[in-house]
Amino acid sequence: MRARNVSHYTIPDVVEKAPAAPAPQPEPAFKAPEVNEPSKYPPLKPIDLLSLADAREPVIQDLVHMVNDLILVINADGAHGRYSTTVNKAKNEVTKVGGKLKTMKGQLEKKAARQVREKIEEFDKAATDLIDRVEASMVTQEMQWRQDFEDEMKKVRENYEDRVKTLLEREQKLNEQKLQNQLLEQAVALKKEFVKDVQEHVEKERESRLGKLNDLSAAVAGLEKLTTGWNEVVDSNLQTQQLHVAVEAVRASLEDSQHPRPFIKELVALREIAADDPVVNAAIASVNPTAYQRGVPSSSQLIDRFRRVANEVRKASLLPDEAGVASHASSWVLSHVMFKKQGLADGDDVESILTRTQTYLEEGDLDSAAREMTGLDGWAKTLSKDWLGEVRKVLEVQQALDVIATEARLQSLRVD
Image 1 (cartoon, rainbow, N blue to C red):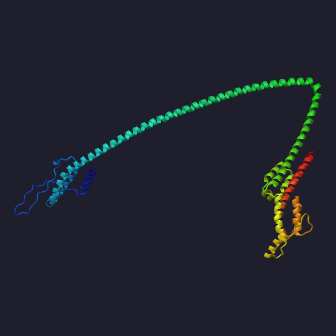
Image 2 (cartoon, rainbow, N blue to C red):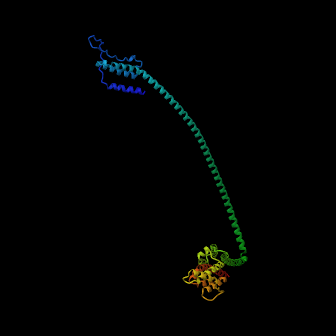
Image 3 (spheres, helix red, strand yellow):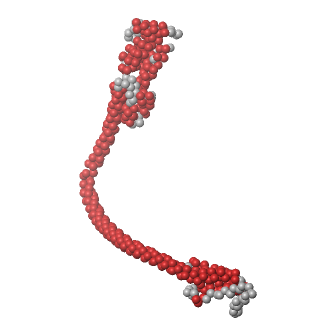
């Protein structure tokens, strides 16, 4: 079909562009040349369209017309001698074009028929697939509609049941409310009747019982006043006892421990029992935070540590200001062989102060022991500085506990 279109549209365009041929004139009969005349060729014969097998084809007709026009032009110019071979070849090709054209048409028709069959098969398959998809979609849609219908019916049933349940509950509440109102009305009526009966009875016995009721009311008021006072006394005594117990618990915790340990919990319990007592709070606030956070040593621990400090102080008291290694060695020897005093020795020398301090410690008088050690100076005072700090912490804690215990006793005396 493409070749047909090209030949159909291209060849006529060439013919149209060629110069218009003169009108055909009747050709004279060809006369052979004489012997003494030059050779002559007969004129070219045009193609007989009716003699061709494919004369009905438009392309063949166009080609024949075009070749015949060329033959007329060549014959008119007298050039048939030069172009006779070419024109005869063109005639032969024109006669072959019909067969080629028929072959091409047959091939194109077969190809077109095959394509049509393929398209028909594709359309059939597509139609079958479309029908299957439509049927599947219809089945799916039907199932979906059925499921939606069942869901909707379920919702309708649930809504209906909820409405029925709500109406029943509302009706039940209304009935209960009505019954309650009736009972309240009956109760009010009975109460009014009872009050009326009581008033009548009271009015009847008022003259005889009124005096007794007044006496009884006065007695009850006095009893309530006495009970309130005793409750206050009991609460105050209980708080005082708890305060004493808390103070003793702190002291026991300090004495029983082999090593210094914190007593924050005991102080917190003591503060809670005191119930915002300003004296107790002030006493607790006077305690060094390091004391209750890390703990304080017991009396036995203070004595043991004092003995070690006393040995070092004795050595330091025997050293001159610029002591060497030999002086240190001699002071160590002398501190072991030196005579030690006993009891409350007189004098302001180091040995007398250490002796009095140890005596006070053994008697439990930490305050006097600390006062004695404060009188040291020089290296002796420096060596005993840490021990004095521990003693002061213990004294602060003991003083705070003594103040709290005294406040507890004063509270009990005020209650008495």
